[in-house]
Amino acid sequence: MSKAIYGQISGSEALLLSEVTRLRRRVRDLEDQVAAYEADVIMLGQRPSLVSGGRVALDEALRGLGESEPALL
Image (tube, rainbow, N blue to C red; front, side, top):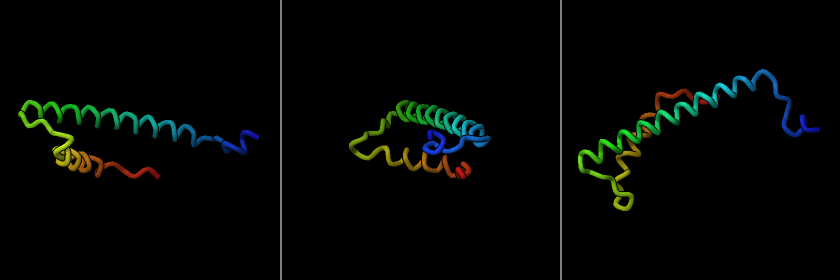
């Protein structure tokens, strides 16, 4: 019964595990990069404000980072 609910798990489980591991590593790398960007912004004295929309430029820069990533199929 549980196999019917969750589906038969086969060799694709290893594939899924490796993909999740890769994505977690990528998220961790991007978080480190964001922290570095924020540190640079603070050093430049241009601390972004969440209220004034100062994060817009940072958000646009982060969107550009993911363009080289392959799509998850």
